[in-house]
Length: 188
Image (cartoon, rainbow, N blue to C red; front, side, top):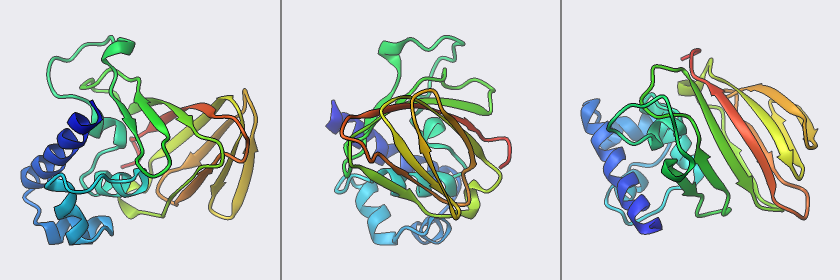
């Protein structure tokens, strides 16, 4: 199943790049990811990390949720067993796209399970400028860094933050953290 998803990621990145008439150089320049790495991902020779995939998606004008949304029939209902699940190869964090794909909504909802001790950094990126997100913690604890501010979240806490300014997700605890990301793409 994971290999199928990695192959689908490779095909989708190439398809989107070609649809936008971008060369590998164009996408590398827009995303800050090397041309060689994008080429390796498109050929299925490398698995992108969450941070890298987010930069490529932003350069393609998509959120991670929109990227993972399967093309096909649009429905207002997203059943759990049909929701796209992806595991970050670097940290093992699991991301499940909850929002029904293909709808006209500018809001994406994502369920995340983040392993203890893990950290993912998303550097500032102009392509995500204006996008915002809420991080609503259900279980465990998270330390969120946005700009120069660090926030410690406990169950029930919700943090609003801009996406394009860069941020760091860190689970300082000894149990997995589970949280919901509500991403608003309207600022793009």
